[in-house]
Image: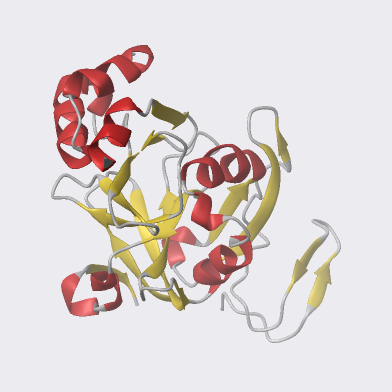
Length: 96
Length: 150
């Protein structure tokens, strides 16, 4: 059931251009705590059920993720347990 | 010349209030109080870190991005300010031009500390709060992080 929810939730994208921080969430963002992966992505785990519910990308531009959206999509999708294409599609407007 | 003042005084030429015992920031420019894209300054706080002397939090950054992306931060702005003023330590991270302040006091219900990410690459030329969140407990252990302060 949880996977069904994950699969149907839209990807919520919020990019802070000035601070260069990209917030990605499965559906509406929910309260969570963060853990860094080895590439510096902040994976968010929901207080409610401990499931990965989002990823925050510090330095989206500075870390050149804007030029490696495919790689970022794979990593984020891996953390969230969804298809990379969904992330890539959600980020399609942020490539420049 | 000592960077520290021994008495409180009003600097008549700059209209800057210098606080007793604090580093002299009167010679530093303070970022403008309003920005079309980012709204008002919520605060400009003095930190103990020399190269990050003052850090600004913009209302737009807070309400349009941090709260939207990290809703657990709702109501936590005072704790963010406190973490900048009186951190447990300040850590270098694997992101260019970013440092994180680890709160000495604020943790969530699982014991994860409040982390405040500061960017030094802001277009204003001044360090700004980039984000805030509850991070891994390893940030509390100074032997497991790359300290820049103390």
